[in-house]
Picture (cartoon, one colour):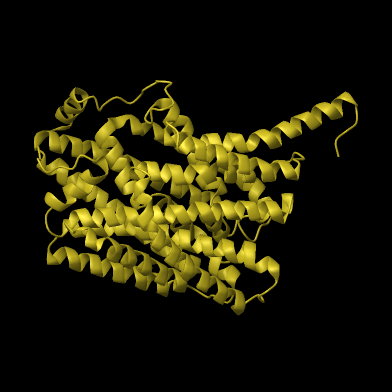
Length: 489
């Protein structure tokens, strides 16, 4: 990289930290620090929250995973786009009315109100384990990119991990949820700009028109949108992506505290619905552009072979940035990678600290409301940032970036989705089944994650396994009540 690239990256990091601090708002209590007291209403606030959700879920992992998938497997990943209308329908017409009708102050309060503190604590523990592992993978992804682009040796691994982790932790501690949401929206714009520049550069310099590109993709077998194979070990089929990716996405939007925090920050059901609409639009555009990027990379290296091109798909995009893009544009792409990482990392750290503060510390009564809990939340934010940074060195053994994300995510998000769905349903589910069911779901999810079955199925198996015991008990009770003609209590 040139000096100009380093200047762009440094300016971006400084701008992000400054914006996060300036936009922190009032922080008189832990509740305001983690939820924001509905202080981000209005159209502008809706846009900020919507793009914040999109930026949070499309992290540095996504910037590696989606181009890598489409570079290697072609256009089949576009199948995931059919899930977005379904997300919006379920969220707008089923989830939001039920969630806000409970008037929760904290994300998992609806679970506690329905099933008690033990089930809420179980959900919180699963969320903590999920996000700690996910944050570790999140720090690892941009480190891989930076080392490839800057052509650094392995001695730079830990310094870069520490730099990324500490920078994100610093402004998360000071900025709270408001600072995180505003910087997320800024970072989403940077991510989109970076990807658009890469697409534009390839289209201008490859010297081929759309028809020629399509013919090349067809010749290489990359223009196949639908693979109806029923082989569960294959990742990129209509069934795997259509069902597995849909359950995984619903888990993110309905069971993840990072998303739930933002709905509460919007202040109302209507505002949350508008924010989610902006999220769907932003996420749809992001997936489309990332997949197009991978397809264009395959066309580029088909026309301009490179003997030094890495075999691993995860490293192709960073290699292109390092060896092809001109000075200045490389710095912008690295800034986009850091933007994707920082938006997700700060959201995860803030949500984890909020979970520990609100679900574990607050109920004990050890600390008073107001400043004591606020200080506790900030301390926990620092500790979580340190823990995620330290753990980042161990996630590389799981597999590709895509597999890492799906494995860590699927084991816990399926059971969390089950807890939230059952908490919002009106049926009299027995509490003990909802405590045991998610534990079974985690075990089944872990088995699937380390089996030959495609990692995208992990959330589906863990969710369905979590639902079997509660739903089965509910059906048996209904049958028994009907047989003795006694209404259920």
